[in-house]
Amino acid sequence: MRKRHISDGLSVLRAALLNNYGKLYIVSTPIGNLEDITLRAIRVLKEVDVIAAEDTRHSRKLLNHYSITKPMISYWSEKEKIRSEDIIEKLRSGLSIAIISDAGTPGISDPGAVLIKRAIDEGIDVVPIPGPSAAIAALSASGLSTEEFTFIGFLPPKTAQRQKRLNELALEPRTLIFYEAPHRILDTLSDMEEIFSERKAVLAKEITKMHEEILRGTISEIIDMLKTRTIAGEYVIIVEGKSKEAVSIEEALEEVKSLMKRGKGRKEAVKMVAEGYGLSKKELYDRSLG
Ligand code: SAM
Image (cartoon, rainbow, N blue to C red; front, side, top):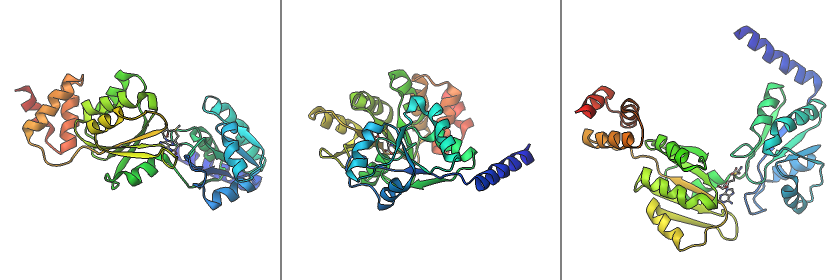
C-alpha cells in the first residue's frame, strides 16, 4: 500500500515535470487598507495568466487600483469544487494562476483549500505569496500571549452548537483567535463570558480601516464597552487561554461539576480537567464521586 503511494506520488511529479504545468500562487490581499499588499503580490498578479477570485466584482477594485488587467474567473465557496476542476485543467495546460479571496489570505476562513489540495494531488506547484490575515494582525496588537495560539475562526451560528464548541475550548491553555460577524458579536461574547469567565480578551474591529478600534479588557468589560458603541464592521475576538497555574483538587472538582452541569459526562469532564491541569484522572474521578 505504502509502495503504491510512493509510486503514485512519483508519477504525479514526473507528469508535472514533463507536462510543464503552470504554477498556482496563493496571494494574500489587503483586509481593508489597499496599501497593505506586497510588491511581490502585485508583480505576481501582473504576471500570471489568470486570476481566480472569490468574488470577481469585489476584487476588481483592488486590481484596478494597481492597474492589473488580467482575465479573471471566480471560485466562490459553493462552487469551489466544480470551479477547482476548471482551474486544475488550466494549470495542467500550462497557464499560471493566482488565487485571491475578498480579503486576507485565501483558505483562512475563506475558500481555497479545495483547490489547493487538488493542485497538490496533481503535482502542481503551489506557491504562497504571504501578506495580511486578520487573525495575525489582531493577535500582533493584542498584548496577549503570542507564544502559543490557536485559530478557531468562525464559531457555529446556532447558540447550542456555539456553546458546545466553547465548552470544548474551556481548558485550552493557548491564546484563542475567533472571527465573528457583527450581528452575532454580543451573543458570542456573552457565551464566552459564561464559559470562560473573567479572562482577558481583545476585540479588534475594522483593522486597517477608517474605524479601526482595538478594545482590551476582561470579556465582561468588553461587553460593557460595546454597549456604548455602534456595532458594525468586521471583528476578531482574541481570548487568553486557560491559565495553567496549579489548581487545587477542590478547584478542579468544581470545574468537573460545572462541565457536568453543562452536559458533559463524568468521565469526559474528568478527562478534560485532569489533562488541562496535569492531574491524576483516577484521583479526580474517585474524588468526584464522593
Ligand atoms: N481570509 C481572511 C483572513 O485571512 O483574515 C478572513 C476572511 S473571513 C470570511 C472574514 C472575517 O475575517 C470577518 O468576519 C472578520 O472576523 C475577519 N476580518 C477580516 N477583515 C477584518 C478586518 N479588517 N478587521 C477585523 N476583522 C476582519
